[in-house]
Image (cartoon, rainbow, N blue to C red; front, side, top):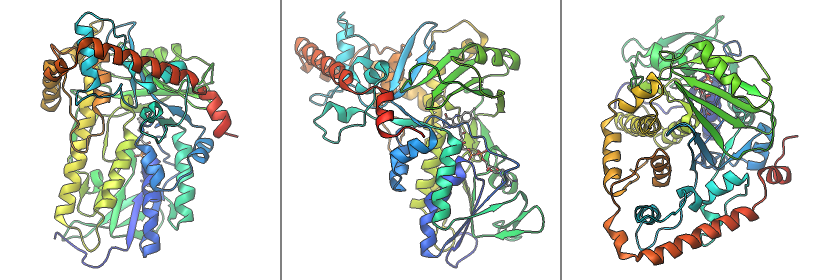
Amino acid sequence: MTGTPAARITKVVIVGGGTAGWMTAAALSRLVATGVAVTLVESEDIGTVGVGEATIPSLRDYNRMLGIDEDALVRATGATFKLGIEFRDWRRLGDSYLHPFGTHGRDIEGVSFHQLWLRQANLGGDPGPIGDYCLSAVAARKGRFTRPASNPQSVLSTLSYAFHFDAALYAKFLRGMAEEAGVVRVEGRVAAVDRDAETGFITGLRLDGDRCIDGELFIDCSGFRSLLLGDALGVPFTSWQHWLPCDRAWAVPSERQGTLTPYTRATAETAGWRWRIPLQHRVGNGHVYASDHVDDDAALRALLAGLDGKPLAEPRQLRFVAGRRERLWEKNCVAIGLSGGFLEPLESTSIHLIQSGITRLMALFPDRGFGGVEIDEYNRVMLREYAQVRDFIILHYHATERSDSTFWNHCRTMTIPDMLQAKLDLWSGKARTFREQGELFTPDGWIAVLLGQGVRPVSTDPLVAALPPEESARFMDHVRDMIGKTAEAMPTHEQFIAQHCAAT
Ligand code: FAD
């Protein structure tokens, strides 16, 4: 055991009321009934980042854990459904592919479906895009949506989805739940942090005015400021900017125009990329860029030129550095959200990393004192997950044919992390890809991006030779046909929302 206290932990203090703070408070609110006081301090004057609008399917697990009625959530946050992300101009200008949620085809006799697809392509057949064999991708392109079927025999069970929503409204929704369950919200600005002279543990927060809040476990959800983990405890930040050079973003909402696409769009620019996220009542837009390669005015012009509808507010600029703290749990403080690290929203992973931090904290929740084993385990799995997500994002930049700017030349030719290089080596030989324990992205996700970015392996798995090519071609035709017909029979995204969960 390290440090104090030995008594049961009964006071948890969360600093910050952004998405991270309220997600943490809502999840920890169940502790209130066991005699643990949960307090959240936030400052309306400081405000939140509040840009996180695109999510990934894992968020549904968090919502389920809290017993959230999904239709009520969609209504309250003006949400739409998301079947994947369309990447435009990433491999080369004019190119487009989807990273869909859900699976491609069906594995047969232990052979992964993409192996069949690759063999057919290598034999000179024309299997079409791999996305034609994924229901989420086909439905996304057709603008259709329904929820997955629970029967594993149904092709509809291969669908998976997430949400686009207004993150500020999501935090408000969770705040209502947390407060109802007994979480106490304190409005105020943290001006100083008190620490035990001997152990260095945080003992309390001093707010503007004379108020003090003491506690035993402190959760730092203070955003980029990292008030507790970074400032007070001095845990250093590791920058990954040499791999992910984008360090600024412009964000602006615009009027909703045309149909509601059930996917996020990420369009590559000369030194970064633009996002387009449709909500029921507006569209969220942004341009993430590398300030070493493009100036702020040019980045803003590119964003505004790409809008479908009129802007609804003044564009807002955000600054960041890709990376994370060396440890995310230090002494009696756990950093969740931007206070712990930041990875650009290309694969919409920040809210997932918040969720991951919360579920792991709950699994390792300290009872009496702070065990070194639990802290080490938390840091090990969280840091590993940050690195895995980082690598997946780097793949999009590195595996490109673009050579039209200094930015793309840098990304294409840079040395990549060893972990990613090992994955690429495995893929480049016989198209193999494995999901490590606890890894967020599935082989289907890697396959979609690897093939979408044009990374073609030299051969296929030898096991594929056991399946006669004509037979597997017939099987593939059947799969494609069934997926096309199933997608066609689904309601449009608009129809589904109007029927189940239109915002009032
Ligand atoms: P913040 O929202 O910054 O909240 C910090 C809180 O701390 C605030 O309540 C503030 O008042 C409080 N605070 C700070 N200092 C003090 C103090 N001294 N005293 C009291 N309170 C204090 N994520 C996704 O998953 N999907 C996306 O599409 C996505 N897009 C993004 C686009 C951009 C450009 C950026 C920058 C981020 C994006 N994110 C996205 C990330 C997402 O916005 C964040 O992960 C999420 O909002 C969580 O932020 P947070 O709660 O950690 O911090």
